[in-house]
Amino acid sequence: MWHTIGITRAKIIELIYEIMEQVLSFIFLCLTGVVCYWFFFKCIDWFEKI
Image 1 (cartoon, one colour):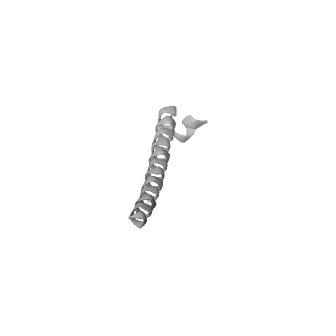
Image 2 (image 1 turned 30 degrees about the vertical axis):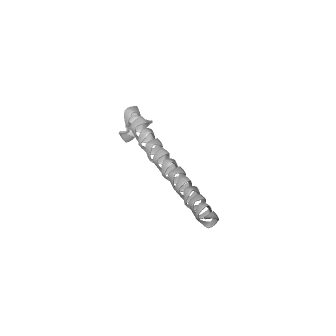
Image 3 (image 1 turned 90 degrees about the vertical axis):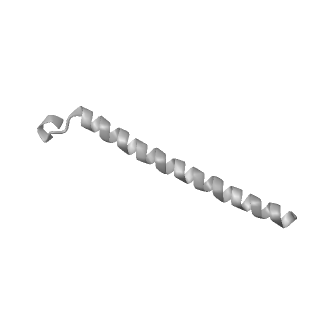
C-alpha cells in the first residue's frame, strides 16, 4: 500500500523521528519555562524577606 503512494518505510521512520524531536524540544522548552517561572517567584519571596 505504501509503495503505491511512493512513501518508503525509511521516510516514515524519518518523519516519526522528526516529529518526536519536535515534541521533545517543545516539552523541554515548557519545563525550562516552568523552572524559570518558579525561580523568579522564589527570588521575589527572598527579596520580600530582606
